[in-house]
Length: 134
Image 1 (cartoon, rainbow, N blue to C red):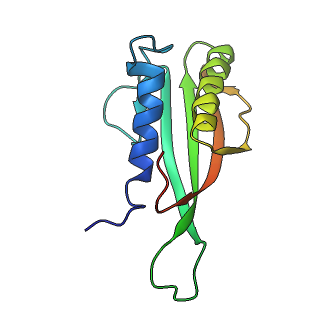
Image 2 (cartoon, rainbow, N blue to C red; image 1 turned 120 degrees about the vertical axis):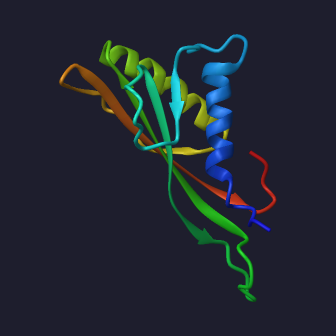
């Protein structure tokens, strides 16, 4: 049996992807969403890459025989071949979605452009207990 914390990255990714791309009135229906750090396919733009950073256990009880909660961190990267403005707009939507999931922003995006590809990185963190529902 998988532990309760094993699928948090997938859950967060699914929620953010649904709200930004799939939902009927989604703001970015052409957004390429992925959790894969590399691909053999040609690059698609704009792209949102969501990655779970190493979680930390917290909230131990005296018995310390199970994981009661974790400090969960997520990194989001947005890439665009159009402009830093597009990156900013998409990242603002990502931040809004992560705030709905009660994550704190620990690194605000600062878009940059390199070889005509604009990108930005943001990081998010929150404590998730074993009985929490995202």
